[in-house]
Length: 464
Image 1: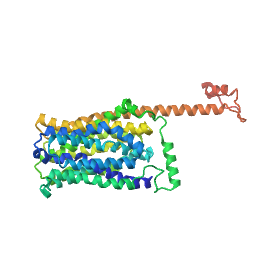
Image 2: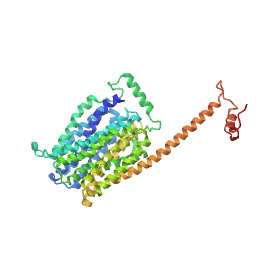
Image 3: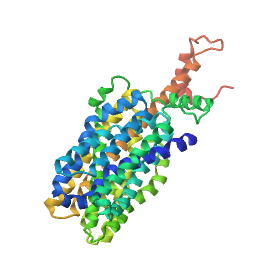
Image 4: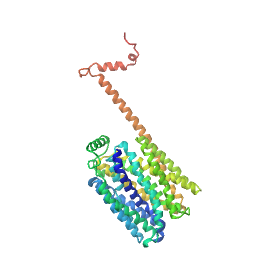
């Protein structure tokens, strides 16, 4: 498993890093682009959030195409198209053009994240999955960290080669996706059987592990049935709260920090810090979450801690204390992702798993649409750059309470399974007593068992 992880995860992390930078670069481009193209905050927020509408509409078809054509080919296609559209955003000349390109960026990237999550479930058994998903989530944390630094520096290129700083933000962050296309085609194995870095014995061993790890209660069948599966909708609602928090914070944090009166470079450096803390925590926490009940407990604790941090950031007067609370709160949001994505694969298999993960991700990513519209709306209504942080606080409050409820449900479920196993064990012992040495059933064994269990008989003195 370590060999597989070292072969797959570095490339998947880099791909996720680039994709996330291309999602959140609008937060830094906004600092100059709004004034250059004479947009309002609300109009820009709407345009930025149209990404998630395109993503929603094409997420399930794209993920099913990945299941059909293979991860290597389809992920390479996704990366090339989203890189090209991101570069085109650097040449936006009007608000309608910005709307169209942001929508097309969502269409181009649809299927990437759920496709990779599904791809990971084909390689790693459940006991390794939370740790691996935690490592994969490093891509988003590193993207938020490096994207903040790069975004601040690129804004300072204003005027270079006749391009504005906001144009450089899009062009420089879109080019790596196109370059990665060739690497994905050459380096990423499509399946365990195609993995030339494993011996035949290792392939057989891994395939056997994956077969034994397949959950007995997993749902197969019509992939599109995922759209009305209650479990999928419940997961999607949970993910929507997470997305509202994450995209709302990454979109609005540069604006909030700008209110501190700092330069673009310092703004970028400060925006790195919450996600730098998230990187450190992602290297430590997910490996300890091997069982469902522990995962639910972690979701509850992280959600409630995030609630306290974001609520404090909106109420504190000191910028230093406010930013300290935002650092911890931002890290809490990122830590929820590996916890969450370790759960859906336990309920679905095959094409139904691909469709279910895609449906959860696409519906849940509507939270990005809500987050990037709610943050400027709350700021406008309250005339403050700080109060929008109550939006992620409210989302994390619901997630924390939901984690407590799930933890209680899992506790009752574990108790029921333990009881069922004990009863099955007792039944096996009783059945064993009722079989004679020659294998035939002893007709008097049932009477012997009743006598053995009778209170008076149990307290009779042993015969001499």
